[in-house]
Structure formats: structure tokens, C-alpha cells
Amino acid sequence: MTADERAELLEAARRSILHGTRDEMASFAADLRAPATALYAFGVLLPLALVALLPAVGAAGVPVGLPLLVVTYGIVLPSALVAASAWLLAQRPVAFPPAPVPRSHPGVSTGPLDALGTGAAAAVGGWLAGRLFLPAWAPPIVALGLGAGSALLVYYRPVKEVRDHVGAVEDGLPAALSAIGRRVERGESVESAFDAAVDATPEPLAAVLERTVERQVTLGVDIETAFRGEHGTLSTLPSPRLRRAAVLLGAAADIGPPAGETIATMGDHLEELAEVERGTRRQLSQVTGTLSNTAAFFSPLVGGTTVAMSAAMSGGSGPIESVSTASLGPVIGWYCLVLAVVLTALSTGLHRGLDRPLVGYRVGIALCSATAVYCVAVVATGAVV
Image 1 (cartoon, rainbow, N blue to C red):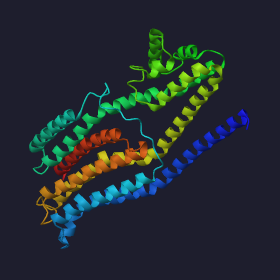
Image 2: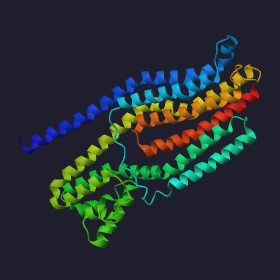
Image 3: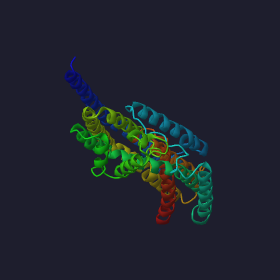
Image 4: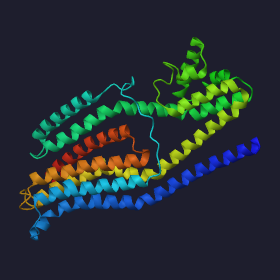
């Protein structure tokens, strides 16, 4: 096989992989709508709507007591939600989460003690606010939701910010590699092409390349060492993609102009991969967006409204004789918090893969939001009806 035939074969294989990945994700996004709709209907709408029917159920003489509600909303439904979510995530084609960010990273300024302290303070503050402004049954729900949500936010937000910065740097890599590769292919040295590519590269990668050039000139080291050496410019950027690019540029400096085509091809390949990833997220965004909004806003709004309406329909004594509003409120509040956790984790996992820091950060936001919406819905609906 000649070199040209080998290059054509590799290009055909690369195209086939990209097209196969795109088709597989499109098929998964289409197949996801039916089970996600079923999960939405039987896990959110129906269970919360049934709360409003409790007065009628009690009036019909059907025995519905607190133990049954606790088992149903506290154990059975959450278990079913977790099982259904795990099944949906198992159907997702493989997703590769970003490299882990160690807690020793200089951008990670908070640890477990900071998170626990903030969560405890938020829980105490929520409990006290609930005692002052909310029904007597609400403080435990407020303390749990705000405490857990705040702790997750404090613990995972610095990691997410580092990830966001790394992602922004990686976004400029295709343009940088293409610019460097074409200059090298025209006969420029890698060092000269690398220096000239700084102006053609978008921020924040341009700043990283500029620091790398300064480090290379100051220390008299090669490009790979300036990137990956001790205290190199990638020491605070946990990105396998950037490190592989640094290795390629280091090897290209030894090979010379023949390596230019390889560098440019890698840049084009990364751009195509990014486009596939963007297309995949667009295809999934309708389902995942609905799940996220349901977790943070819709389910606690419906839950709080139905609890308040059930109390009003029964004249304030409770929806049925054996279950008072003081018992029903925490049960439905707990279920709304479960929905905030499970649906947010499912949405994030389907959209980005099960990346623990991102899931933890978004679950923290959803818990705080769901707690606030649930309490406001209970108070506002009670005042209206």
C-alpha cells in the first residue's frame, strides 16, 4: 500500500467514524423522547396531580393514610425514578467526561469543610426563616433543601469554573493547529509558526500560547517542555487534548515541514469533533432542558400549589381525616427535592455524561431553586384560595 493510499484509507475511516457517531446520537435523541415523556408523565405530573385528589379519595371512603403516602412518595416513586433514570443513562452512547480537576488545583479554593460550613449555615438560616414566614411543617424541608444545595454549590463551583476555563481554551485549539500546520507546511519552522499563530488564535488560548512563547524564549527550552514541563503553561490546565497537541507540536519541531499537514489535519479533525458534539447537544437539548426546568421549577410549583389547594378544599383541616396538611406538606416537599436531584442528574448525564462536579453543581442549584419555589407556591396559593 502506498503512502497516498494509506492516507486515503485513514481519511475514509475517520469520516466513517464521525458520520457513525453523528447518526448514532441522532438515533438516540429520537428514541429518547418517548421514555422521557413517560418518565415526565408518571414520575412528575401524575404523582403530583394525585395530591389534589386526596380530598375526593377520602370522601369516597378509600383508606389513604400517612404510612401509605410516606411509602409511596418517600420510597416507591423515588426508587422507580432512580431505576428509570439509570436505564435511560445506560442507553446513552458513550460520553467522555473531562479530565478530573484535583482539589490541589490553585483554582479550587474550597474544600469539604467550607462546603459543610456553608451548608450548615444555610440550613440554620432556612430553618429560622421557615419558622418566621412559613407553615409549621416547612422548616425541615427548607433546611434540607437549602443546606444540601448550598453545600454542593460551594464544593463543586470552583471545579466547574476551572472546567469552563479549560473548555474555553480548548475551543481555540482547532484554529491554532490549523494556522500552525499551514505555516509549517509552507516551510516555516514550528517555533516561528507557533509564534505567528498567537495573533490568529482566539482568547483565552491566545494568552496561553503567548505565555508559552515567553517561557520558551526565557528558559531556552523546546515547545513541549514549555507546555508540559515543571510549572509549564499546561500545569494548571488539566486537559488531555491540550497535552496531546503539545506532544504533536514537540514532535513536529523535529520533523519539520512534512509534519505541517499532520498538524493542520488534526486541527480540522478537532473542529469536526466539536461540531459533532455541538450537534449532539442540540438534538438532546429539548428533552434535557425540559427535565432541568421540571426539576428546578415546574415540579415544586405544582407540588406546592396542590398541597395548598388540598388544604383549602378540606377547610384547612387536612385533605383527609388521617393525613393532615402538616404531614402532607413535608412528604410532597421531600418528593420535590428528590425530583430536583434525580431529574437534574439525568438531564446532565444525558447532555454531558455523568461528570460528578457538573452533576453536583447543577443539583445544588436545582435543590436551592426547588426549595424556594415550593415554599413560595404553598404560601402564595394559600393566600389566594
